[in-house]
Length: 379
Image (cartoon, rainbow, N blue to C red; front, side):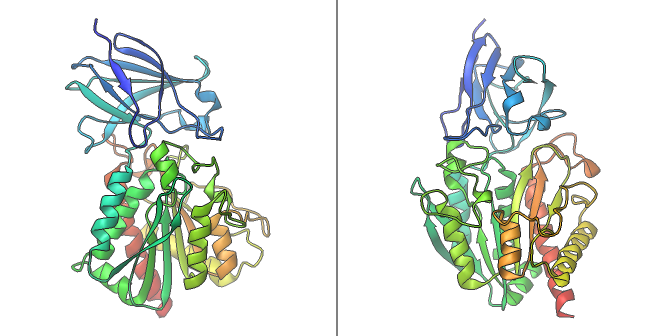
């Protein structure tokens, strides 16, 4: 029987091939550079020729979030455009924790990933397309340790400064799909939501805050192995130039509303995390956050408020995290949006589970909720 071939030698690729026997393979995930984090995988299988493949990813008890593997099904595509799901079975007692993926491709090729990838090539296409739209200004906020630009797209004439930024954790690729949906709305002259937001706001959008980790196939860190969302209190050029550049631009403009877009490995739902533990919490900040969450929950069944992270005790908020740092630094309403790697169980999709398409739609819904929030605030 002809053996399958497996490679991850491409943008955001990550897998180590331990052995192949016909259509079965034993695999492991490579750690982020200079870090112990690992969970993101992205690889191509060829030579399947319509046969069922069995792919065992081993050693996952030591991954960043082993609790995320239960009830998880891998993303799979045969054309790199539509991403469905391949059946996964989790066994923590086998080979240091093993996820077994089974799939029968219709042709010779199939790509597997922890979530549908958003490549750096697609990122540059997105930036080029939006930067060419009327009323959009591009700026390079700085460069990364690998020499890549930290891209920012700005638009709008209003006095309210809104910052949207995503993918501090590069393996959370749903965050940049969210950005594509949001930016397409904001740059669309036919969109009434985009038009009214541009009239009321100056929008600053960073689609990918960690391009080095994205290209390298990291889960959570940049080229130096640093978790950028623990650098916001004291960013440095040597460890976290991405955060240093973004925070400097925020200091120059000010921040009235901020959203940091992420993905969560374990919780099967879309939810928000706030800044309740910051030392200088003001009632109007918390009221603004709660009102936005209520508006978004009313707007879309792809968001809920029952599941989420524990709330920090008063004065115990971690100011090294961006949402807390911005709420404390600017007295603004800030939040972290989390999307699932699995599915949004309150409105489940058995075919794709959480997907690029739903991430993009959620981006549009979040902006619609922001417009409602601003109109209520004006009243």
